[in-house]
Amino acid sequence: MELTFRTLDPRDDSPETTPLLKGWLEGLLRGFHDARPKQEAWDLFVRCMREDAAIVRGAWLPDGAFGAGPVPVATYSSLDGSLNAGRRELALRMITDVTVSPAHRRQGLLRRMISDDLADAVARGVPLAALTVSETTIYGRFGFGLSTWRQRIEVDTTGKFALRDFVDPGRMELAEASEVWPMMQGNFAAFHERSRGSVSRPSFYRPWLTGTFDFQEQGPNTRLRAAVHLDAADEPDGHVVYQHMGYDDVPGGKVKVLDLVAADPAVHLALWRFLADIDLCARVEWNNSAVDDPLVWALTDAACRKVLKVDDHIWVRVLDVVTALEGRPWAADGSVVLGVSDPLGHAAGSFRVTVKEGEASVEPVADEPTVTLDAETLGALYLGGVGVGTLAAAGRIGGSGDAVRTWAAMADLPGEPFSLTSF
Ligand SMILES: CC(C)(COP(=O)(O)OP(=O)(O)OC[C@H]1O[C@@H](n2cnc3c(N)ncnc32)[C@H](O)[C@@H]1OP(=O)(O)O)[C@@H](O)C(=O)NCCC(=O)NCCS
Image (tube, rainbow, N blue to C red):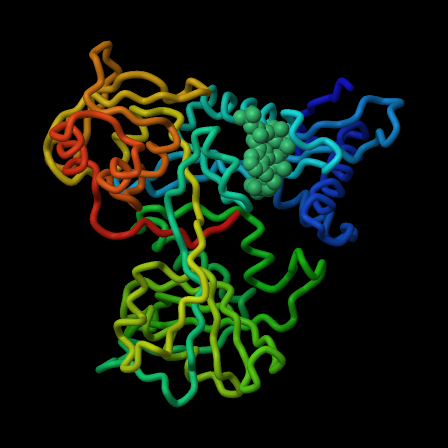
C-alpha cells in the first residue's frame, strides 16, 4: 500500500493542515501509550511546536483505505537547537517523537523519515544531529553513536546525610517556579555555555518546569516546588525543581528532582544540602546525575548515594565532519588522515585532521586514511565520552598502532560530557 509522507509546518493554521496536525498529535500519544490529548494539550503542543519551529513528519494511509484519516501510522519530529561541542556551540538537529504503528513496523517508515530529515539538516547547513533512544539497537545504522550517560541516583537524606567541611557560599530560598523562570533559564544558559555535551532546551521545558502543564497529567502540576540558590551578592546561581512523591515507595517519604542546575560545584552541593534538609522525606531521587557527580565524594558516608541505574542519554550524529571536528577541543598536537565510512554518505570521506594548540583544522583530502572508523563510532567519540583506545579495543577503529595512538592522544578529552536536557 502506497503511504503518503507529509512534512507539516505547525505555524500553518489552514483548514487543510490543522486536522492533520491534530491527527499527528493523536498518533504520537497513541504511539507512546499516553492518554488522548485534551484541548489544553493540543493548545500547548501547537504553541511549543511553533516556538521551536519544529518540523513535523508523518506517514498517512491513502484516502479510502481502511483506517485512513488524519491520524498517521508513523510520527517523527525535529527541531534545530544547539550542542556545546566543547569549543563552539554548534547547530544541532534534534530528533524526537518517533513512533510507528505496530501494524506498519519494519516496512522502512522510520528509515524514510530519518533519511529525509538528515538530508534536510545537511541542506540547511546543520553539522550535527542528536536523539535519545528507547532501544539501543536502532540508530547506529543511521550514524548515531552513544555520546553521553546519566545516572539515576537515590540519596538517603535522613540523619546519615552529611557533607565534609561544607560551607554554603550563599543561601537558598523557596520560590514559585513560574515567577523565577527567567532565573532558571539564566542558570541553564550558564550551564549550557560551559558544559561540553549540553543540549539546548526545547520550549516544553517552560510549562513542564514551572508546573503550568504536565504532559503526562494533561493539566497543571500543582505539586511541583522550586528553590533558588543565591550567591553572596544575592544573585541567583542555581535552582532545584522537585516534587514530593508521598510515602508509598519510601515510608519516610520520597522527593523526586525534576531539575537541578548549579553555577559551580559549591552551589551543586548547596542544592543537595537543601534537598537533604527537606522534612518528611527520607530519600531524594534524581535521574540526571552526571557519572562524575562530585556529590558522592563530598558525603561523609558515600553509601548515602546509591546509583540505581546508568542510562545512555544523548546519541550524536556527525553530518558535517569539517565543522563538527573544528568545533570540538583537542588534547594534543598531531595529524592523521581520518577515513570515515557512512552508509548515508553525509560524513563519508578522507579528512586530514591537524591539531595545533587545542584547535583542529580539518580538510577533505584524497589521501589514503591512516585511521578508519564509521559514522556511528565518530558520533560516539565526538564529545569525548569514550576513549579512542576503548573503541579500538572493541574493534571499531582501524589503523596501525602508531596512527591510532596519535589519534587517541589528539582526540581523547579529560572529563565527561554531560547533558541536562532530554527530548
Ligand atoms: C519506530 C521504530 C519502531 C522503528 O520503526 P520502523 O518503521 O519499523 O523501522 P524501519 O522499518 O524503517 O527500520 C529501519 C531499520 O531499523 C531496524 N529496526 C527497526 N526497529 C528495530 C528494533 N526495534 N530493533 C532493532 N532494529 C530495528 C530495521 O530492521 C531496519 O534495518 P535495516 O534498514 O538496516 O534493514 C523504532 O525506531 C522504535 O521503537 N522507536 C522507539 C522510539 C524511539 O526510539 N524514539 C527516539 C526518538 S524519540
